[in-house]
View (cartoon, rainbow, N blue to C red):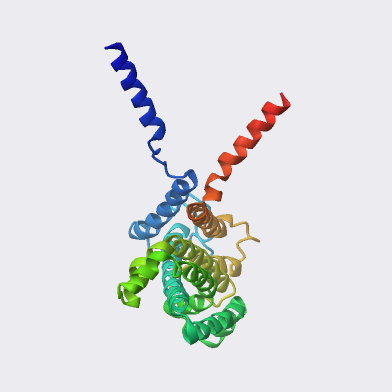
Length: 309
């Protein structure tokens, strides 16, 4: 009985050591997702519980109080209400731009990389032309000549200047994947090109596409904030950039109205930080060296301490 018990214990220990460990989510991914989800919920829910952001009152440039949690603007408008609606507007612009940029980069990058030939040459030439276009000056020129700058127009302008870099990455990855054995086997089996792209190639590109989506989202929100800050942003929709623009025109910094310009700037910084953490986590998933880098650094430091002792 003792021998059997010892053997079973040894088997259990062997199974524990050989069984794959269940990998916990990365801390950066959890923190980043928590920040982004909190901001998204604020933008979706808060506008229903705040007053009209354009309602004017006699309480101009009042600091945070029980009546106005984030104070008021120069014309007595509630800053919290403006922040809630501006969060929704900025997120809408960011998501629309990120989706359009993802579709354009996937079309020109994946399709051209897989089919090759003259189509790939034409797509690569067009991508290179878009890639060297100066993004912000182009957006300023278009915005200055268009009077009715709606949300979709600004999103389209931001999208056409932010997809080319991701298309280059997707093309290089597609060129690598299409030469693998399972893709050749699918071709020999008579699979159609659209099925090979959607079933064999696209799943392998999802981490890269996710990283490109997050990066496009960050770029779009910052680009829209920059355009709005100089007065060329979305007309008729409140965003974080428009709040900063009106705060600058209202001389909030000179009058000491920090509660007017700090909240939108803080939201931009926090959302950018959360999306950056998510992007770093996706990069670690794509590149195992980045995922194992912290453990390798700790191992080297421990070896150096043991050697010094």
